[in-house]
Length: 545
Picture 1 (cartoon, rainbow, N blue to C red):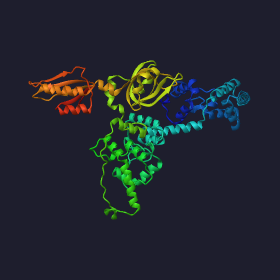
Picture 2: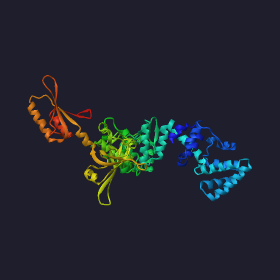
Picture 3: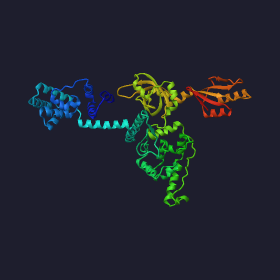
Picture 4: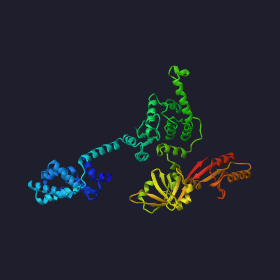
């Protein structure tokens, strides 16, 4: 439809209405769309079998497009009344041959009586019968066209408001929210995480951004959303515990609290000094204490117990910070976010593998439909919707969806491949899949998998651990200690040693590949105790530890 609109260059709603009516298999296969465009642009002349047809068909350039036009022609050319014209239209549309014979005779007789030659009357009826098979009601088509024009105008000139409305209407369908989120990125409109102090039930338009709606968070019912907004009417929430204490009792349970945390709804309360994954982990760890404090505060209010400052109604508020918890990893934080929202919004688990995937020249999900069926490809992504199954013979195989930043790809592991790689398959893992691409008209692109590799393993195998040795009065003893540390941390990463010699020259020595190490916090700590600086070189980037 977009391509046809570009060709037609519509000037008004009438043009859009005609396209709506013609954009169906019958008119498209019959070449009517191209004919309409050529006449609209003046590249083909418009002719009428009889002059009387111009009044009815001029707005569609002589082409019968609407059911109403068929009825009007019967009335004007053959003297049918409204009821007779409608019966004829119905008989034509339903291909009722016996009834059409009667209507044809009446039409030709009436047309001849009004001065139209019999041969032309027969031809006109034949054209009417042909076009009526896929004629569309003009009343419907104009309404659709007007609505399309309004939404297109909003999308072009007020995109934040347009997408906020669309997302709000599809809030319970995570797949559609994800689809429109991709469109937002293409238009450089930021989709912001939900926020207990800024979000409303639906999505909220902002300048260059849209704020995620609270009702779109999984497990958060409308009653809970209403309770949050009602409490917020008394003033913004000042802390995590303040939020818990002010929400109406019974409106918020632990699961709702967990989903709010995972969705990032409390991120705006985060101190600048704390990393996001540490903050969310700390909040998650503090849900039970927060709920307990909230219940205690509500009991005190019910019992009339007040603090020293509550008499004046101006009780000071201390910004409590949740206790330090073991931070989530980036992957854990994003996995929890996806579980709460249905997709990733703060980032994507593939973010840290961008350079690796570029170096491996992997395909992307959005590119697959443009490749040839049978092409052998490698594609990186996150495993989701893993479904182990059993064939009729009792052999195990698996289906899964591999998600990257642009979408998802269906993957199939037949029994032999599944036996080799089943231990590597787990939802939310980042993997590189290699296999044969299958394309068909009826199905989405599918990869028949023959190899699976964890991206972390590939990344580690391609990394070089560089140890800068400190100056030492006992270099031989230092080398012995470094060798001991390396032997104590075996792994997949090659090692290089660097040191400054007396002339001030930096010397690098590549260690024998038999002495590979595991890049870990334990190795880093052991090296620092020896005074060594550890640096990781990978994909053209250096990382100093």
